[in-house]
Image (cartoon, rainbow, N blue to C red; front, side, top):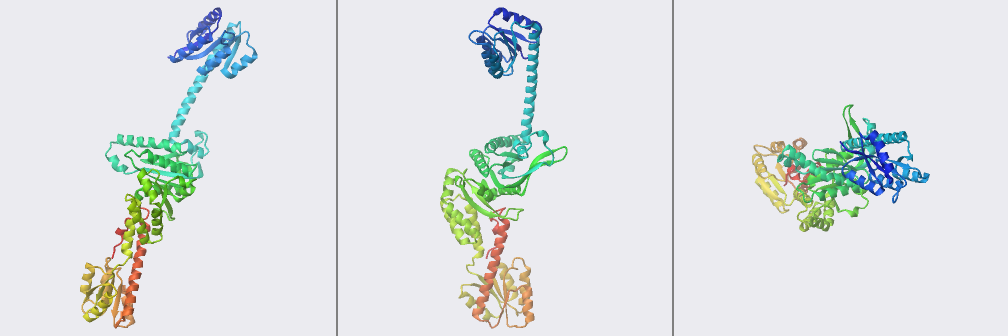
Length: 567
């Protein structure tokens, strides 16, 4: 049990002894009664008692003492032990000294000399009660403060302030408010793979070590963590977009020498903060399209192989954009959304050499992105090659270059391949000579069966198909080609001496794109072939762009080669 002491101070030994006897008779079973004959000695005793962790509920001191008067002494005691009750014995103190002691030393009461025993005992009893009551209130307050701190670990204080809730007991279900702010999502890369090598306890230790490093950085930049989702952090920044970006840069720099790598996405927009749940379980949450978009942007860091992406809305809200190292990355429609959003890379946390190279190649990079989205793929291809010449480790430039090359490979016909199918050798030779003279690659088949086999081995860009042939005629050959998913898109132009409308309609119904009537004119032949090659090429470009838009936000455009075939 803690030792409790009543300290008496007086420079007259007879008075001091009498005071000690009276107090010991009444309170000796509860308290130790210590005495001092001067202010200096009293302060030394208090210091020693505090070192021994003793409580000093009460100090009784004379006013008139040499060197240090009672009011000055009590001011020193109050600084050392603020909760101690101070009583002054005096026969000479004026009202000014008493007032000063009340204001500066929290004087509990003063007793005139000579004191009456009943007055002394009552004053001491009430002073001790007052001390103990304050101790109880302090303990209760500390307990409540501790509980509140624990509560705020689960429901951030900033969250409640945004809801204008000043007392946690005022929290009600469905309390909500609309705000506009920055939303951050941060996620550990390859955590599933990492976690497989750890025990459950090691997983918890790993996550908590990581989160304990991120939390102070977010807090120091005026943000707060709304929730932890496994290894993912969702944080809110109510004040400014700069707070969110600075926090993200700080988080990445904190992990520079760590094996942990993370991706961070930030978006700025309107959201609803509030409480959700039922009667027995409530939770604070944030709901809005802006939150979903921030999460999607974080996911795009994997696609673009960069640790930090922000949306155009964040970029536009930055107070001084030149303060950061930023470059535009893409204009995308993320999964589940219909409106496109421009995203930017913030690379302040990149290693110094990487940062310098990105700044050096910034102009070429952004011209490449612009050209790509204007469908000037050849120009974009050249810009990204220039970037990679200077910075071969620029992964985003490499992704763009790969896509440029794939798109160019299916949109640029170098030497179009034409298959002529005619059972009359003379006709085939004439056609072949005309086409080769205009830089076309030519193959010849003399019947339908041979044509189907040649198409299977080496698909052409266009087929000139005779209608009237022995065995499988042109109509049946066309039907089989269009029935095969691998050859159905190859344009077919029928060659025929027939002028019957019914035959032409039948050919179009089977999937032919045009007719050339025998005997044909060279100019007409070339115009029709070049026109349908161009149309087919444009159709493939459109298919490429549609595929590109579908993939844009999941795999950038890296899967284009899996979605279409080249010539």
